[in-house]
Length: 221
Ligand code: CA
Image (cartoon, rainbow, N blue to C red; front, side, top):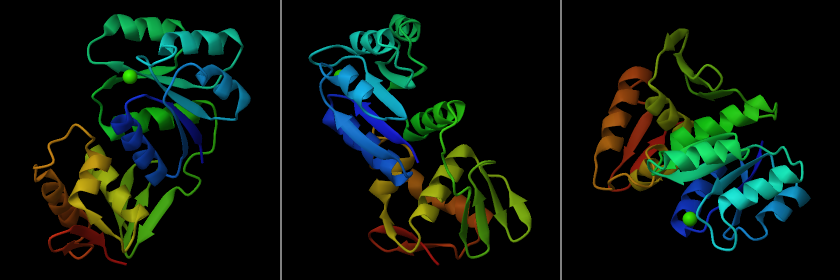
């Protein structure tokens, strides 16, 4: 599993990132200031850094420059505000490996984190199969299997299924699921969770996910 440093001064975003990454098996450390970021990265064994550009102390560009200037090759994904194309270009030129535009969905960030870690060959998802009753999720192919039948899931459906399978028999609230699968900028009044649970039931079996009245859902084991 990977160790990830999150350099982000907005606590709402860092908390959202931490929660999602930890739920996916990563270890996280949060730094709210850019001043000591480069030294912290150089002095520790992080597998990846998520770096906001607008930071107190030292901005993300300066952190990146310092880091690459000292020869660190740790993969860096930068977070930029919407549509700031020049920031993205400058970020990639200063040695970032990828960028994610705010506001972002957690699944988008997670896909980029995984892609980066695969590139450097770190061990991610050592457990490639998640099983519950007659259903198997394959984390490498992103496909599901019910008994012997392969079932195609959309990427959103897969992330929702994966979230349930990583927390078997645990009641997950709509808000938890919404945060994890759709992201912090999603309207909490939306019924999209219920709609997608409906899709999963149809594809993976009606009895798999149980409704816990007034709270949310639970994967039945
Ligand atoms: Ca910021």
